Image (tube, rainbow, N blue to C red; front, top):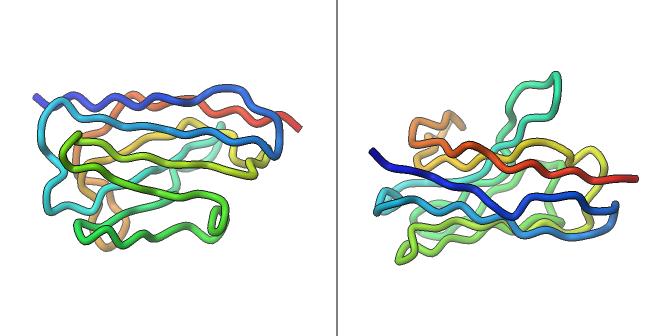
Length: 119
């Protein structure tokens, strides 16, 4: 069983930054598109950013220019640098180790990390 652990969330003021990390217990990223989702209270989980096995990133329109995704296959890790945070970025953030072209996460999920942005 692969364990996936997200970390780096917290409480930050609007305009601030956070860096999220997601680490898997063993190699499960190779060849996969991986990425981050978020779920705000009362809302559906949404795809925030993905990065392909060729290191090509894609972002939701709402975070373009503010968030940067990166991956380190040697460390079984994916990161999300979040700058210029807004209150609407408040959510639980989850990573997934295998995301299909249609945005469906079919890999392993972590428990999530809470991001709260105060106005």
